Length: 172
Image (cartoon, rainbow, N blue to C red; front, side, top):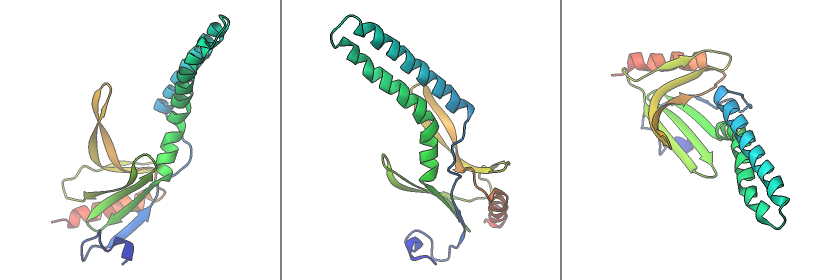
């Protein structure tokens, strides 16, 4: 057994698979929507700065914060997901699924999800399948919403889902 896992795994727990999500830039509908919104926001701020600069003085500089936020929303919506996936690792044992992340703003995190007979299991097939086995409720400005948790965009998803289903069948 890998000594890095000695203090994490149970005595007779075995690692079956380890992998990472695909780190490529992907365009999804929600990302494109936020990208366009951010561009409109930045464009309006730019228009406002140009108009305010015609009055003279430095009042136009107050628009820089709004312009920066618009650009951040635009490009952050595309690249944050890439950053998150490139700093994520997955491990499947004969009892649990682990998701490890190492991000600058959150630090290192390791979350463990026990595999049971009655756990939620969703498989999204495709060239890079996703397997979801848990949900978290995340808060936002508009309330809260459930978010599926699992192994996203993995190359060998068909084999991993078969392993998880076998673990579920063998679970007490």
